[in-house]
Figure (tube, one colour):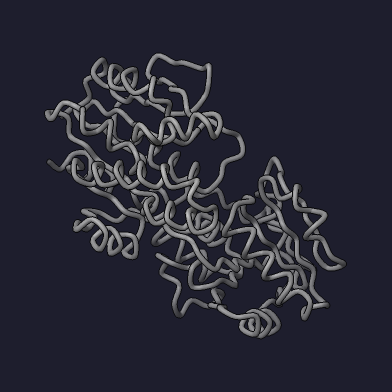
Length: 371
């Protein structure tokens, strides 16, 4: 049975350098594309772009604090209020069987969608908790955005025919806040890009790699790691790679800490180094770089938060570290590279079983086709 699907999202999945949220959104669209015929798949992305395609439309986001404030007061999130009717008109024009909404903060739009359209909502996290955290850190100036977030997320969950979360923690939190659990769990996954003969990890035993974009949890985590761990691991070197971290080079670089920042190709670093550190102290959803490190068969030294939602217990090569002493002990005991070309088969096997893109196609097929 043919079905027409409209993918509605707020991440620019055409960016060359993507953060974790963008990668997850692209994964969702790619999964749908494996199931739905090309002529039946449309997308509407709320992102400032002049590009328009036959089956794709872009709509304007808020570009500054003033626009965000005005839109939040009118209970819109991320998009300009003037774009709302345009988005609804496009949905009506496409007239999809299924509206796959790749966020929980477009409930105001979902409320106005024709009830004959089946609505699937994918939650990257519980947005109201993130908004609450921003009030705590940025003050009451963020309160209008918090109200708009809570309003839209509540409506999204109310009007979702099917609700998807990344992991059990988010599902439990949705139940606690909104009284509804998710219908499906769809954890982070990647298309397998691992090529064994590209590995060149010789002499990387004393090198630690951190990969992640420069935003709150990543910045706070790596800053803590430098101050609390690297000062005691003087025989090791830490390399920091990720979008916009070059802006923090002057602050973070030490004699044994090197900040690379934005790069064109992260894979060069995954193939060169064996030991990944993920010292993330807080956050929500799932950490994309954890799955990516698994895919490349790396040793992983990570906090409980960085491993949230992952099958990681009793895996040789994954080490839970929630204090400076944990990191120092486990790194010194387990960072050794045993010869050129080393990769961790046990860690990679966890990826292949649980977080490989190909293994989730049937799950997405069930979500879209089982009504």
